[in-house]
Length: 209
Image 1 (spheres, helix red, strand yellow):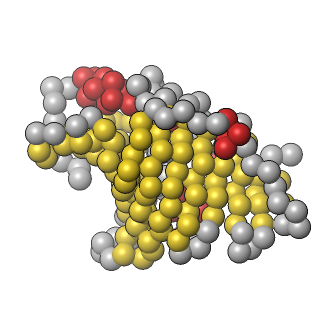
Image 2: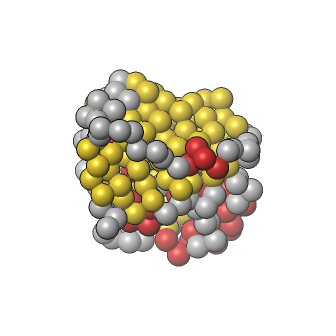
């Protein structure tokens, strides 16, 4: 699985559930709704079905509603994913290549959209359960209702009502775990960071036209 795929399969079932799925959905929405923007350092690990680590990435991200994203992988191989909410640019410096995709096609239905998209219809898209591990820690598990989804489960962990990590389990039981560090909620961003200027002398694959 390459970096691009792992992010968007990114990018703990069981335990004690609260009273009913409607109240769980409302509680998760109440935690996500106030987040208008986020920034953090991150580590991203990919594990196989036997929980052996396959890949490890490190980088930084900035997200803002609606649909804006700068996801910058720095190690072990640099890659940038930038979206202005309509267009997604995927830049691989080592390959000297930029791929241009539609935001709606590639981001809107992925786990990343939980943080920079709309949360009003969560219960129509996911079956949601909740697990309490400690007094200040809550884990929400989201299982897509769409049987064609590329992932089978998302686990979002909050500590003191602040998101700490997101885990995505794909249909092959591979797990992508993204852990946030130095998280900032609702920072102000220069809008220009969510636009990408294509460098000279790189190959451009435009899948939007």
